[in-house]
Image 1 (cartoon, each protein chain N blue to C red):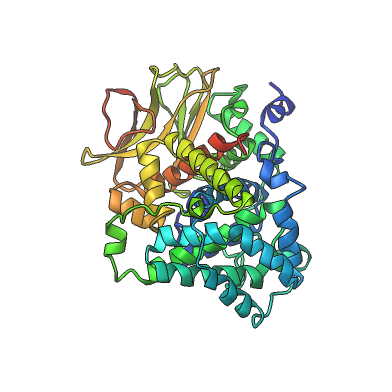
Image 2: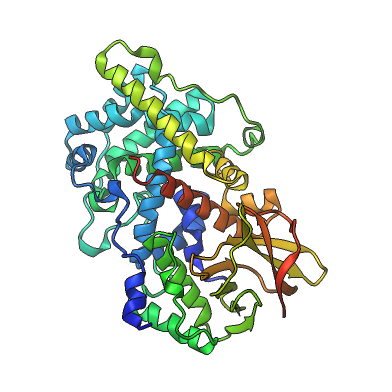
Length: 252
Length: 211
């Protein structure tokens, strides 16, 4: 079972979730300050999209709404720490079925550092990756830490700078991270591919190294039938299928 | 590098760069807080400020004008009902209200999915009519504001990759779930989730500082 509920944050922000996923994510959200902060930013962006759609409603709507609120009881304010984070009052707050720890940041840094040491990347400055906001970066770090600290996590050399691939079947995730990664060609970024046993390739996330060559990316996936991971350079935004030669590959 | 240095290199968890999440003076926020305490006059002001976006969003998503009106009414009454749950420190009033409206609209589309054509065909884009009734100076200002917002959204969408735009078109505007997105595009579920998230992050970052 994929426990990486955090990866639903974008889908949740645009309501691209099923009721079950919504419940799962909200129970996670209640315990995760980083998600709460990231979600606020994504929701503001969604609201900006919505605000551009403004179409004045018929005047009669105002009278109907005002009439109806006169007959509609209001929910009481939430008390103390049981405040729901989302404006979602018509569904009872979810029980914390699969709650994860809200990891203190120091623990995250320490754990990632420990993993890097294990992976032979001690002393790297991965956490300093720029170009992303603090929330994204922290969220990513936390997910990366969940994967790299999984009991079944194992690291493999990726052959892209000093990059490693860390995968965990249990977490259903694979992480690629490293440093000294060469700049991709202008206008291109790297993309991770999942190579199946039958030779088919599935598109993974795109990534680009920081100015000092560090990068970190993560994807959720089912490890069944996976033969290898590959990296190519693709136009910004990624491709559905590789369009250039493989620059790095690691077989399982 | 020490753990402290590393830690210092991580941008802080405070919502720096998200002016609307930390803005103290969100006049709508104050009105929504008062709405939560049962102040109907405050609700009327919230209505006047946001009924247009709520209705326009519903129209964009459900397409049928009568359905859109129903969705807008449900959403606005819902705002009244749950206003006490609004927490100004967690986001703007606009975001709170439009989140409710979007969810209502998407839920309605999904419950009507037997009308599968709604999911398959793009109707003509509804023109914003905010500019049509510019009888008063404040409406002129509203119209200019609406044009500015529309231009800003175009700029944001232009910053997305075609794949990201497609992902938002299918999810945000058409109500696909992340799984439906993955299946309709033939991509892994993790890729679909990541694409939506990346798109929203890019929008947010593009709009940062231009509010």
